[in-house]
Amino acid sequence: MIWDKISKENLLFILVDYQEKFFPLIKDKYRETAQKNIMLLVRMFGHLGIPMIGTDHYRKGLGLTEQEVLDHWSGYSFKDKITFSAFGSEEFRKDFAENERDIAVVCGLETHICVLQTVLDLRRKGKEVLLISDGCLSSTTLRWHNGLDLAKEAGAHIMNAETLIFYLLERAGTPDFKFLVKLLKDSSEAESQ
Image (tube, rainbow, N blue to C red; front, side, top):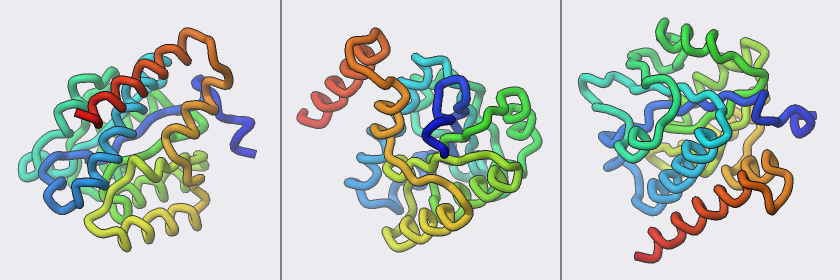
């Protein structure tokens, strides 16, 4: 059962192609939700020491990963790629091999293309995948749902960011929980401004 395997020692975070040039294709409310959850994962995983690797798709034409993510990223630098799966990049494969874990936590965009193909390659490698539904985006809701459905059919576990983080922490009152509460409070205050 996947739940028994989830621990910070078993996780690797993969952020796929979360680049600002894609954002005009996506409704603001969906992008804002994904931004909040991706930042929650980036900040919390950085705090917990969970390794993080990421990609930019065709950086020359589509630019870099979103700036707030870059400002808080504590993982390996983002690798440029032109293939849809992250595993098409030799540099990504090197980072993955250096940080290989039993479970990959995956989010980014587009859910039905680059995220899905990365998930399929992870499953081919025998890895468990936690696909963070509220940290994934596609240009339409139909494509987002389709990407999640196809990933689930391939054996990925669909989860939201808060469920994963609270499961990892297990209890209130710890320093890690207090760090999370501060992140959630800061995020809530930013939303109300």
